[in-house]
Length: 243
Picture (cartoon, rainbow, N blue to C red):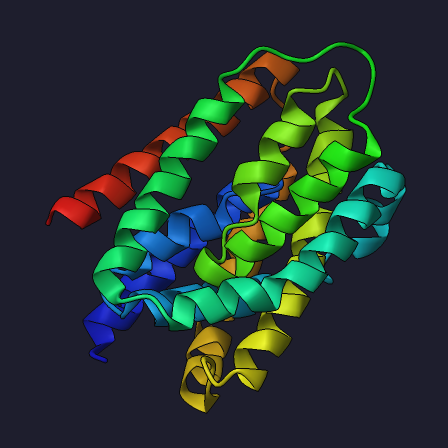
């Protein structure tokens, strides 16, 4: 990998980490399609998973305090169990098919967020469990637990602070599961780990700046920002697919 390519990866990582700090999600949804311009889709997925695992402990105390633990921990538990299945599916999929499916996932996430908010009642155990299973499979296959988890929380009439913390708690759990599964199944290696460590300072800086920006925008603007990020990720995935 050339120095120019490494700098491009660092710049993309910084931008994606800023979005994570601001919204609570979006890092992998942005990283995987754009990283796929430089590395193989499978490698892009692994790097995104490793970076999410590395940044997960940052601010964990505040995340635990703000999150809706009951739903977040239930989603996380089912997601952890389903993550190895997603990685297995990725290993059986050709790069071209993987790019198609990643593009579909990114666009589906955008469309789901556009749906109207649900009533005041929180989702039941069945919907929560299915969200976790879908998040786990997508973590392993595309490093993207967000498509089922983001609509799950954003469609509820809850404060952005609670939604953001709940999503970040789920994503930390799926990143740990994804990292372990990737190494056990042979998809991750020392080279990708070192590359992730080289990119980690960009993650730290971007996430810190994004977190400082959170809370300074109205909830409606925040939700619009979330939808816009998903839309841009979907467009970038389609562009990558067509080119």
